Length: 326
Image (cartoon, rainbow, N blue to C red; front, top):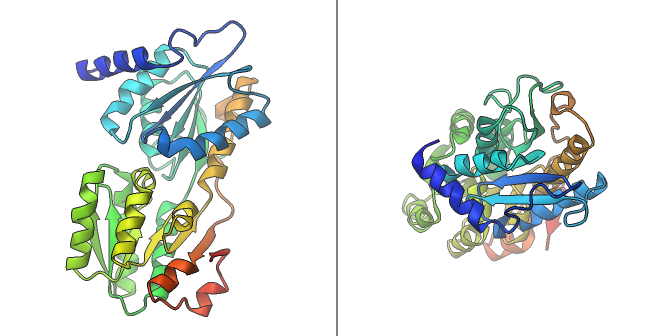
């Protein structure tokens, strides 16, 4: 481990509210690792705890949870994952793509339950979806690229005269490279131009949206990255200021004022991760637990936002929407 990562691990140990209590007599401990902040994860944590309760485990009663958050600083993840391994937690629940990779790199022994938008085979998390083998299993929003194309199609149907679509891209997330590649191929077939807007931190948002305005992009497609989930309020506010139609990958952003979203339920994924973790605590082996893929995808439209932007939502979209927020 590099010296900087080791020092970060020592700091996280000192600040942990459960420091020294991982091995309580008769009470198992699990770790939770995520690259965003705790504040941005509360809804997902509630879903995870619900899944654990369904398996008979209640935090503070018969379970200890060690929380580690990187606050969107991805270089902290290896040290945080290493700290959970050092504490010998029984299971690690890894939320997000980068956290999942960090957890796997940290241990080949402790069971890991991930929740990721990546293809877990393509990016090396598991070798088989039905029988993942090893110490890793979880929930995947596969296939990310296909979903991104569907989001682009819906956005183009809403704004058919817009030939330039801005794409919010986090250059620190390697999995978005594949999503962008698929998007560009689909855009070429629709005679659309994808304007890539690099946003690797909150400080990049304001100049990023300024560029969108300068390039006269007619709509915004948000890349499937947890950073953009944690920056929901800022992204919605900036899009609203520009009356910029936005397609997101999470329903919660549409409920917060975004125009549209299409994807699976992230809270369902974390609930299932909790169920899997509970099963492992009872003796199930991650190698035998198949990777869970979403079976239902929801198109959500915020009609209030559409009206505020002066956009008439086509009937063809309205009849296919799973939910319309008014």
